[in-house]
Image 1 (spheres, rainbow, N blue to C red):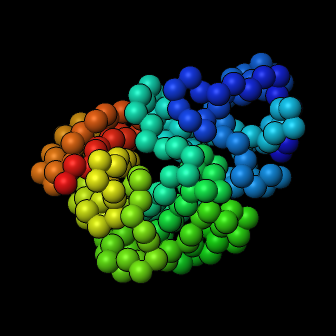
Image 2: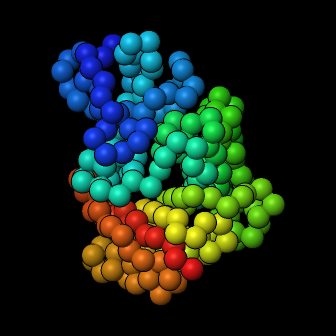
Length: 235
């Protein structure tokens, strides 16, 4: 659905992220649409001064939720190369694609074949900076022939060893002093423990692998029992 906007402003801190005011007066997060006219998950498209933006829903994207919850470190910029683990059907990955632009690259690792088909047919075909990779993020060596050194690694996988998966991929693909983000799904790791215990344990795993925690943001109420942890890689 395409609508108009009363006003668009750049985000006060984050490159490639915008605030849009819709015609009904509501203020929403957005990114500039790299594939004009195309939506990914039914999000609103808004036009302002001839430029099309995609509303970024925090209830559908953990990265957007983290921004709404006060994230201060946003390791994405135009032309960045990104390794995205657990791209699914491309909801958040497509917004990352918008932000890094045509000079950037988003390597999208997804394990499920059906989901990968949706990602390719509905998203990647319209976005030349997205590279779909059908593979298991637990085996990062499997896609070494396709992925270059990257500026940022984003991990959103529903696996018990989420921190280990991120660390293994960081060691292989992230540039020194680069940053990575782990979307921790506490219920996917251990349903018997309180989410805060899980978050603490996953942070300890990351730090034991030489990844320094920069920031952690609890994502409720947008995502229950989820946290986004930002780390820095200093080998």
